[in-house]
Structures are given as C-alpha cells and as structure tokens.
Image (cartoon, rainbow, N blue to C red; front, top):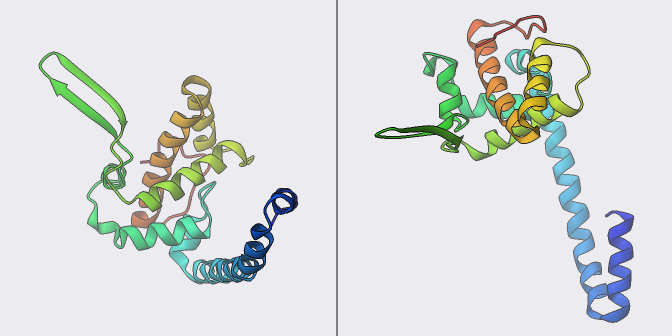
Amino acid sequence: MRQGSRDQLAQAGAVDPVIPVMVEMFNPIHKALCAATEAMDDELRTIARQSNLAGRLMTVPGVGSIVAVAYIATLDDAAGFKKSKDVGAFLGLTPRSYQSGDIDWSGRISKCGDRDLRRLLYAAASALLTQVKRPSALLVWATRLYDRKGYKAAAVAASRKIALILHCIWRDRTTFDPKMEGTA
C-alpha cells in the first residue's frame, strides 16, 4: 500500500473508528493478492522466455511477455487469418463506418473483438509512444501521428499496427526489423 493511501486511511480512521478495523482485516488479503499477482507475472515471463514465438513477438517495441502470451492465446493460429489486416478487425481495432445515401464516414473503433487483448495492445502502444527510445520506422510513424492527431488516436492506431506486425512476425516466422517501413 502506498504511503499516501496510508495517510488518508489514518486521517479517516481518526474520524471513524471502524476504518482501522477494516484496514486490519483487508491488509492480509491485499498482501496475498499482491504476492499471487507477482507469482503469476513471473510464471508468464518464464512461459514467454521458453516460447520461441513469444520471444520473436517481444522484439516489437512496447510488446512484453504478457502482451505476447495473450496475443498467442487469443489468436491461437496465425493461419486463421488470410490477411494481417483481418486481425485488426477481429480485435475490434478498425474504424466503424457508416454509409447511408450520400453520407459516408468512419468513426471510432468497432470494439468488436477481445477487450482484454485490445487493452494490452493499447498499453503496448502507449509504451511505444512514451517510453521506447530505440529508433524504428514504427516509432517515427506513431510519433508523427501523435503530433497530428493527438495521443489517444495515435495510441489506438499504433495498437492496430502492432497487432498487424505481430501477425506478420508469427505468420512469416521472422523478428521485428526496426528499419522496415510499411509492415503489414
């Protein structure tokens, strides 16, 4: 538990005597959950290190062991998609379109696919935009998009692009090439 949370609980405990009792009851549960989460993360890292495919997927900037293992588990088989672009639609990362008469616009993403993997890919894209320093064509593309469209739009577009790149790596049995321009 963070120190700020402890201070807030101490202040609240001075006002209401039930709060310290609740904290004492929930503290062991919190510690057990933290330990279980850490053990699960370690196990996922071990699985990812032992998997050749996960190792290749983790060469993409921003993609870690959890994203790689979740991607493999969700897609199950790269051959199930004829084109890499189909992966974006499967995960709900393609823009929704509306067509009626003279009206034709594309809006927000469809969000039709696996929500958890979509969130993980968004986190990978966020890491790409904010933490990755190693230059690559993917980073340059995402940064330009960020400058033009803003953070959220760039992160969503980068998540879709990362999903497509991961599929290409899986299908072609390759690794990420930072110099590669228009992958997928």
